[in-house]
Structures are given as structure tokens and as C-alpha cells.
Image 1 (cartoon, rainbow, N blue to C red):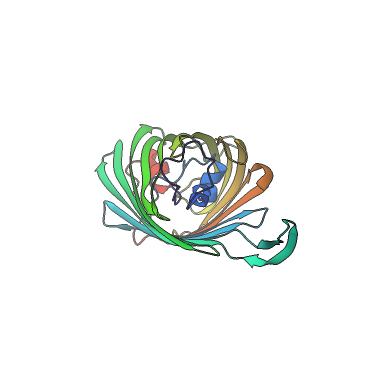
Image 2: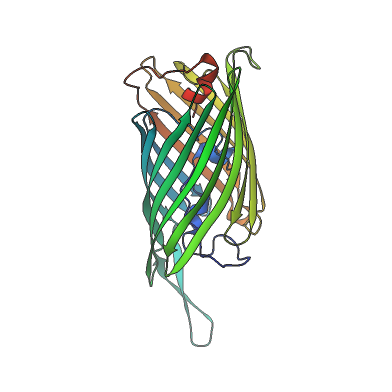
Length: 324
């Protein structure tokens, strides 16, 4: 799940994106963005990986994040991420005494940057069930021409997975936050409920090992707005085996009061694994955002080879233990 640092509480029906840290609501990996904003592939990531994501709007706005995540014992996963957001060159303007346009005064600096830490603790793990908590701490600094703002927040949630057999697994999750303060006010982010299903098939559309994932999610935002997303991912190959795996993703996001309420999305991804287990993955996604133009998401990640073979609890669970 992407870093989320949202606006103030009690904002009524204000449009998203008009308050402290609201730009962070669009932050997510290219995998998640392409599937309608739903994290179908990511709730149960395994192994150690390093990842960089960039988000670019046609208007010149850009977000860049760099993070890593790894297991800490048998039940814990820990991760950290640093990020920065820049709206691009904003021309300052001057107004004359008579109210007319007095020309430009150079570019205005307006950037946000910060970091987050995340932990996942497995509470229950059996052949059929897995239940875990997720906690995140976030810090954000916003630098504007005439002021600097800083905020801190925490967020948390619960996720549960049921292996249904024949290489398939169902995951459901709930997430609350962030809760914290920034820019001189108390704020809360959103409440999220979602579910996803993934299945690895021995023979798919082209007759080889392939897989399918489906997911849907709903958010209640601070501004009393409700957003929904739905998406799908189809891959060619087996996620844990050496060689290449191609991902095709489609999704749809409904975001009232945003620049475009209905946002179709799509993307592609390629994972290449060496026999040692070392893997390199690149994912790309494209979304429309009304008058703001197209949004491009790109994520590149390096998956380090495990110190010992990743255990598949049973063959049916390959998509759970190896999938991302």
C-alpha cells in the first residue's frame, strides 16, 4: 500500500488535493496504479527487495520514492521509504496597483519530502490461513514560498488470507489512517476495505503456466467522500520460477470531486528471475486525470536471492509465497 498523508479533518465536501499533504493520495506503485489503485499483488510480499517508483503528470508534477523491505525472523517484515514531490516549475506573477497583470517574477518553489517506516507482523499462519497486522509511521515536510509545514502520522490495519486450493488464495484487508497532525491542524486520512483473489494456473490461455488476480477496494476519505477501485492482473509464467514473467493489468478508479471522477487505468510489467533467485522487475502504468492530463507510473525493483530456498507450504500455495 502506498504512502498516504492526507488533509485536515472536518473539511466537509472539499475537493481532494487542496490541503496539507493531499498530493500523497496518488502515491502508489505502478502495479497498484494499473489495477485501479487496488493492491492485488502486494499484501504478502516475500524475500528482500529494493524498489524505486516515479510518478509523472503531463503538467510536470513529479513524485519520486525509494524504499526497501525485508523479513525480520519468521513473523516480521520491516521496510522504509524516502520520497519527494515536486509540482514542477510554477511561474510567480505580479499584480499592478490597478489590478492588471504585471508580469512574471520567476519560479516559485513548492516541494514536499519525507519518509515512512512500515512493519508487518504475522499473527496466524497455517496451511490454509494467514493473518497479519500492518503498521506505518510517516513524516512529511512541505516547503512553500512563504512558509514551511511539517506533519507526522501513524496508520494501521489488518489483513487475512485464505488458501482456497488449486493454487488460489483470497485476501481481505482493512486499513485506517493516517492519524496525526501537520500544518497546525489535526488530520485523519481515510478508512479502506478491500479484497483480492489470485490464482496460479498450470495451463492458461497460451497453454503454459499463467495466473490471474482480481481485486476491489473502497475508501472513505476525510472530506466525507467515498472512492472505489477495481482491477485485474493476468500474468504469463510462474511467479517463483527462473525466467521471464509478463504482467498485463487493467483497472478503473471512481474518485468524486477529483480532476476526473472516472479514471480508466492500464499497465504492463516484466519480471526476470535468475536460477539463483535474484530478480529484476519493471512495471509501468498509465492513468487519465482530466484537465491535469495523463499520469505515468513507473516502478523498478531488485529482488535479492534468498539465503535459502523459499518454502512453498504446499504446491497450491506458490502464488502466496512467491507472488508480489
